[in-house]
Image 1: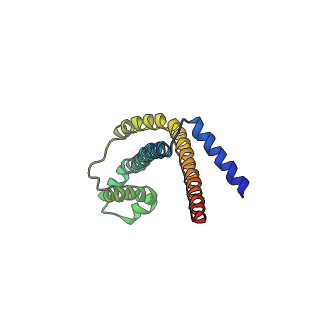
Image 2: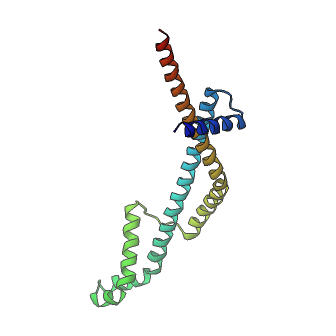
Length: 170
């Protein structure tokens, strides 16, 4: 166990030296900054992904709702005749599911598919720009957090050792 601890301490010290970190306060500051950057980037990518999923679902329901409008009008004009409903059960069910979805999200006026595509494009562009930086930011964040955790363990161990030496000197 001691060899493992010594190797971990050595790797941590090498990491700190390579990154020009000379004090625990500097390590803590860089670790906190990396954490903030990573969480902000991660949060933004999640927001983009969530909105894109919502747009896809909205497009799906708008497509079916609009496509099945003629069949629904015929069904409605027939006085909701079961003889017309049975052969058209699937399209009418998809239309009803779309209507229920729009009601559940409080949508009164449906956006056009083109408007949704125009909203999608900048989200896609931003997501593609942020994605490469996500990996490097995450690696930096994890490296600094690991180094900080290792430094915390080393410092707490040295403090305990120092306290026990101080007690023994009395």
